[in-house]
Amino acid sequence: MEKAPIKPQEKEASVRINGFDEVVSCYRQEEALKEAERCIQCKNPTCIEGCPVGIDIKKFIFQIAEKDYKGAYFTIKEKNNFPSICGRVCPAEYQCRKTCVFTKKGAAFASEKAINIHFLERFVGDWGMKNDSGHMTQDTRHMIRGKKVAVVGSGPAGLCFAGELARKGIKVVIFEALHKTGGVLRYGIPPFRLPSDVLDFEINYLKELGVEIIPSFIVGKMKTLDELFKDGFSAVFLGLGAGTPSFMNIPGENLCNIYSANEFLTRANLMSAYKFPEYHTPINIGKNVVVIGGGNTAMDAARAALRIQKIKKLVPSVSIFYRRTQDEMPARRLEIEHAREEGINFRFLVQPVEFAGNKDGYVEKIKCLRCELGEPDSSGRRRPVPIKESEFNTTCDLAIVAVGLKANRLLTKEVPGLKVDKWGDIIVNKETMETSLKNVYAGGDIVGGEGTVIEAMGMAKKAAQALISRFSSR
Ligand code: FAD
Ligand code: SF4
Image 1: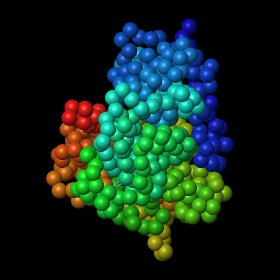
Image 2 (image 1 turned 90 degrees about the vertical axis):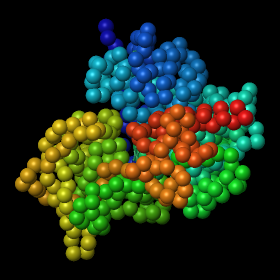
Image 3 (image 1 turned 30 degrees about the vertical axis):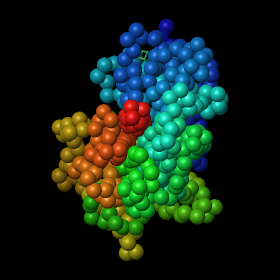
Image 4 (image 1 turned 180 degrees about the horizontal axis):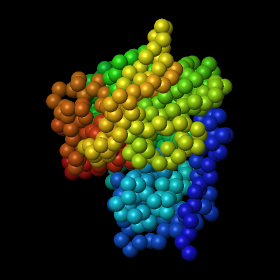
């Protein structure tokens, strides 16, 4: 008889919306074993091709089933430095689970029956956190001495790159513009999905390996790349992310109480504004919050806003407006499910066209058009087509715009000879991740791509390997 997939424990929706505590628990040992035993150990495993960094999934699941957790940890670590993070945030339903043999070929995302590879990965990663012996240490056989490398940005790309080099004995200094490390993992993804202690664990490990972190330091403003090279750095890695929010550019978008999702989440997560006045950063919240967008950022902003309403003793009322339907939403399926359970209201096929404000300049209403789906666009998703004369108004006293992010040009525009494309993304050699400038590498969201944590780390690993082989061959 076919065995049912094992779901990890979750906090009840009515309980979890009262705070920012983690929602999904780690598999208990018996749950992990049961799920691992569901894997049929395919002769030619198709799951691996769906993993952007090619983790040997079949092998690590086999090792779990054999209770060889340390072995499983090392198998994952060969390809993925941060399994506890990816096990929590990877959109596995579009990646390895989608290509698992239990998902029908050609499906838009993974079947329920696909092995819960991400939950198993998290189980192994969390096991590694609890058992220090599981950590990977320096690769003492092939140490590279006398080299110093600068990393700009401490998101998953920068952290992963730094870890790879530090394991080889290379001195690494990370420069981070914000006062805390982690990039989007810290300021964007809320602690109810990725608790800070998981991130702190990985960052402390890098520090133990000798990585130096200099926070509140904007490269390009406080020092140029040339100055870094003059300071003795042999190479620089740019893991700048894509931190500039996009807007819809519609009338009224600059009214008060219209946030970019980045600002809203940075206040809530990085600055703990939901604990104001205990923490000093305030955050405005409304009685009727509308979040515009359909990705992970929109889900995170909506779920954070709902929690803040609860904390501030308001009746929760948060809606997500999206131009397409749920099927086209790029957000992780689990996040959509969780948002629904928590009481977020979804309004599909609607496109805001104007914000209207009150006499004090605060948003009061959104004018929208209804849409229908047309032909697929360049993203492969069906294009939303506004329907003529379908206009309607909706009340809203706080709006959060989550319609995309793009490259921040603060550093790149200051560096002569550094080639970027029309979106401001840095152009790299895809094999080595080297930019148009010698000894300057880049990876993560600043070079474009799918915009996922694992992809950012995959690029960073590629860049680190290219630089290490360059150092080794000298
Ligand atoms: P970032 O994480 O953006 O980090 C870049 C860092 O560089 C930042 O800390 C920034 O301050 C710093 N920096 C920039 N310029 C400078 C400078 N000049 N000097 C010094 N420091 C600088 N992906 C998933 O896989 N799963 C998810 O569930 C998911 N959820 C998301 C939710 C939100 C709200 C957002 C915004 C993104 C989400 N993503 C998710 C996408 C994912 O987080 C990104 O793809 C990933 O973080 C990119 O990593 P990065 O290292 O390239 O950049
Ligand atoms: Fe196991 Fe699915 Fe991978 Fe086959 S494709 S090895 S069943 S996880």
